[in-house]
Image (spheres, rainbow, N blue to C red):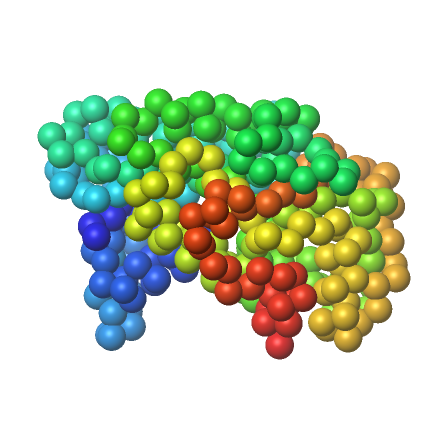
Length: 301
């Protein structure tokens, strides 16, 4: 396949690029600035780079690609000031809108566009478990952002749109997991808040595999919950992490302390969702790490 990857220099994008090149796909990365030349693994072909500005000037120069994967978006791991929130929202809407406009001007537009989204648009859950048929009930800034993000993605004129509702992507390096693991390394791990909030998670290896699966499976479209089929609470996640690391799970972090330290961004850890990837399972996708205990053993070994 010939694929355009927007956001290919990020945490998930780098892993996805390696997987695509490893299976022989041609990868073009759309970025704000082309990187300086670096040494690559000589056993793999190199991705090619094009800037958003170059694509803006002549959208048809990228005609003839089979698909687009859009992972573009300002990091949410920052204090949510008014300016930061505006950047978070606009970066997502702008990327989807630009893709939509470019496809309209292509003679041979791609057949499929996979657009990142987030699990938070379902709202907050206690014991309720969300699947792709659940209504969207955004309950905070991030949930409302994801709703607007999907609305922009729905305007992309491709034959098939896949909206990946992504949870916490766990990897040994990169992403949020090393920070989650750190208190346990220091023997001060414990639940956050009351610990009852859902924590939708997925191993990075499965995250990459399901994107490839969605690219290769023409019958998949619409919303896809990109989470493992093992919904757990924050407290249960911490207990299993402590067990995997042979560390205690005993030092709770009160919610008021996080709200004081992080402000509105504290909703990232004090609220959450439990979700199931029914669409992926119904289409036959097989997770390498379907259970949290297996994933944590791999991530901490």
